[in-house]
Length: 451
Figure: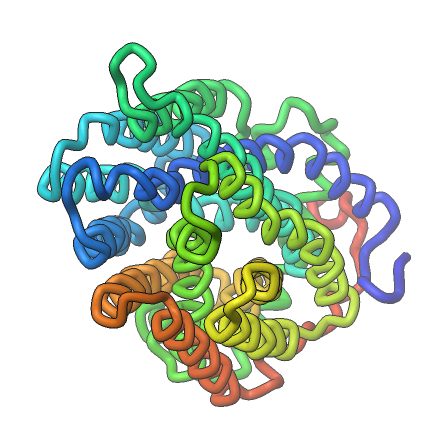
């Protein structure tokens, strides 16, 4: 028995087996998801001029994407719980891939907004659905590192996507097609392939896993049952509430607001960084160079994100593992805003990106800590909905301030302020709610199964 975690060696072995089966595939799905979500920021380097739109209009398309995602998010997560993750995650990947590829047909502001709305509708539910899916396979103690092992797809995707996008824009004129149109075509189609693969590869729940032995299934199911019973016990100490009332408590709303500020800042960086760097570098800098520089922050994130979430799990501390990165990340935004030297500006953006992404998977463990199991599906979806709401606000801040001032300085300082406000909201939440209580001692799988 591991005294630090409360899990047996056999349970740890099964967690490892499940991780090796599922997490690499979720990582690939998340990678193509982020490439399709953020490639519009790189396309904007030439697309905006080609179709004659301003920074504000481009920002409006990002906001409309977020609003469409926002509206469809919770219904999508509830459908996933009803029809199963295998079918629904596959459906999401296929439809967002088709919609993203169709963005190559954009001809003006109306078609840009319409197609980005379709991408938002198609993609809605993927991120919270993946998080909910992990609750079917891992106990609370293991979830931050499980989230990290597939959420590292975000920095990987940004690094690969940025480098690739810089090259694809260089295909401008090939077969008479603009480079940014090639970008949407060649980065959208892989999602369709991954979606079809997901339908045949994923397993809905442990009871359906043919790749686990009967004994492993019984042990895993007993472990998850024990973990849920502990959450029920903690919830029963207070007044029983409906799912809606659980979600609408002041403390959970504060967590969601802070998460919205974090994700809004992360999205702003992913969508606008190519243009920020383009405005800083010397005129005529090749797009592939901008692509390589855009890849630097996510590459640096890969070195710190696993360490941060592993430390959050081992220390059983969540509050400062969420708040500290937000405050340091705000400093990164401020440094990037005020610096005139390209290398210092890039260093500030690296700091902001590392901190934003490091806190992200830790935030996703909070719903299953402060909400009873019956509210997990809706709670995780609601958390992500508020995150998407953040991504609806920050693009407009960036675009409007850029058109108003002619530079990105005021825009970036505004995002720094958003992160400080989000961190402040976390101080409303009682520390005991986000403390990782030890999981009860393991019970034999045979007892749990009634043998």
